[in-house]
Every structure is written in C-alpha cells, then in structure tokens.
Image 1 (cartoon, rainbow, N blue to C red):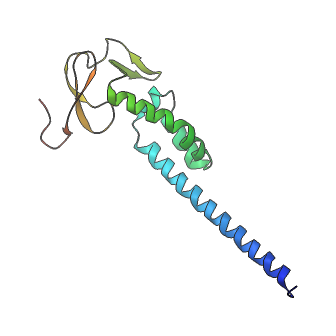
Image 2 (image 1 turned 30 degrees about the horizontal axis):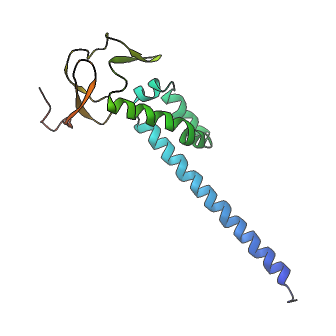
Image 3 (image 1 turned 90 degrees about the horizontal axis):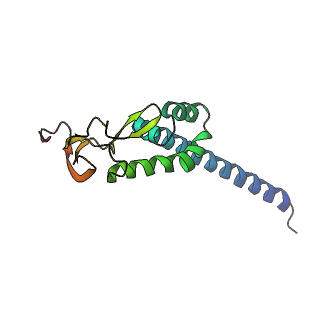
Length: 147
C-alpha cells in the first residue's frame, strides 16, 4: 500500500463533495431565476383560471427559494394547460373574475370581432361569436391592427 493513499483519497472525496454541492447550488439558483421570470411574464388571468394567485407564487418563490421547485414541477403545468386551452378557444366565451374563469354569454366579447388574444401573446384573435378562431393579427402597435 502506498503511504498517504488514504488521506489522498479522503481529500479527493471532499473535493468531489464540494464540487457536487456547488453544482447543485448553481442548478437551484438557475431554477429559482427561471421560475421568477416565468411567473412574472405570465398574465394574471392564467393564474386565475388555474385557481392560483400570481402575487402569492411570486412572493413565495422570491423569499423562500425552494418553493421554485414546487412551482416549476406542479403549478407551471396547470398554467401551461390554461394557456394552451385559451389559444385553441377551448375556454369559450366568458370573462375573468377574482374567482377565476366565468363562462357565459355575459362575456365582454360575445359579439363577433377582433379582440386581444386570450393566450397573452400580444396580438389580436378573431372571436366568431361562439369560439376563438385560428385567425390572428400582427402584434399590437405595428399599425396593422384590424379595424
């Protein structure tokens, strides 16, 4: 046996441990930042329709960083499902209240026409009176908005 081999192996193990812990810390920091950016960029109505509170999740993620993991792997899936449903017109006519999505004919856009895209993409989408169509216009502010 080589003299000092045990202490060298112990030193290597300690270095590997600290490198692994640093990599884990960097990974969690990146996830924390991504979660904050994702929460901030999503419109409030997506959270309402998903039965969540945007401000609550934002504050929890900022001040209790490990909550970012819960948001990223549980809540974000619900928000993506709401976003996709809105983009396809699956939510139908209705309006957002503090309690979430309220379907019904009282929707402010029940008459056919061009309205702000409910998917939150910054463009207009055509409402045919019963559902959102696949027809979209350029983003607002380009001078090409439908009239």
